[in-house]
Image (tube, rainbow, N blue to C red; front, side, top):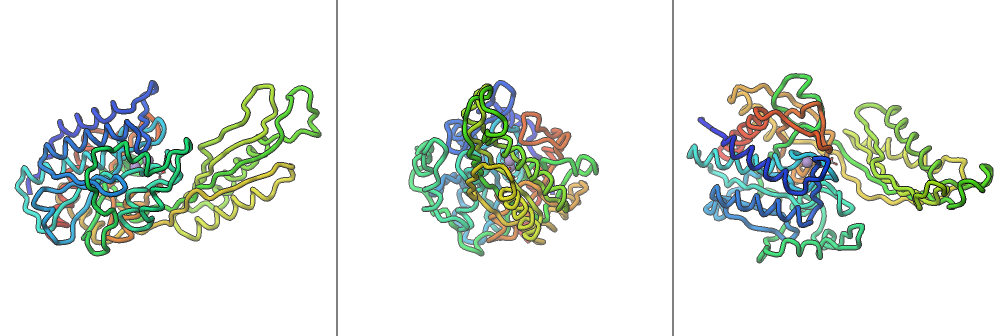
Length: 411
Ligand code: GLV
Ligand code: MN
Ligand code: MN
């Protein structure tokens, strides 16, 4: 099969998307359902139409595109896609590669006149990163039925805006499709993504085949002390919320080291109130993010983290709230072996690996055989402005995606 990815169009699309929401530090900020997210989505919709896809939308704002006659094809579909929202000051490839890469793959298959028995579908999943609403992977959770549409509409962002009201940013949606799809109506799902770690680069392997996605627990914790004068309050009587929170942050780090086995723990969001240089901190708001490859390990690290909240001798009140828990998810042989087969037919080495990051594939895997194609991240960097991948690896990832879609659509 002769598949030629239009690499100029791919690079142009990635460069154009990187201009939407770019800040002074070069990082990309596109919160779910923001004006920037809408602009990125509209750019891709135009590209989808340009390559001959007919675009629909569902109730929660996912974009779903197929060739026009594929909408009438009742065979189970072969689905691909990723997201366009980002973390604050994130990279240009996390999400967009799997979206414009999918458009490039369908374009290449069309130009090569590859006939597909099953319909191909490209999805732009809404709200994957969880950087606006309390949860991530919102769009894929709606498609799999893991979360109901009502539950999603009721999500509230820190400014008090509901998901349902923010969805109005996508004003041109017309009559939406039902978000949830029936089990069995997707034959296979494959998501192209940057690895976001250093495994492939170190191994000098261009294609990663994802075998499982690590699970996640995020908890919001508030430490409540007493704000007071930094000079006039003796050490013995102060109630400093920050020193207590700092103790907890270090205990979390230790817990992850102690458990090992791929467990990681991070406190990436941390605010001190009132935040004056001569005021003892009266309150700290923090969020911890815990990841583990198995349910048992996720339980173990979460238990340790909760124990450290109870363990302090300091007289500081603690208020804790679970933001989200997502169980680790295995990927499936049908999709994994297709990626391996097509990598090899494209003359590219591949290797199986775990994904430490969460992806929409985790939820789609609940209802359909799924896997992911990873391409190497330069220096293993992601969720930061330096995130990048060599152009030849980007194109190779798209080529393997195109071949995998065709393989799954006809197997
Ligand atoms: C998404 O990128 C996540 O793993 O947090
Ligand atoms: Mn991400
Ligand atoms: Mn991503």
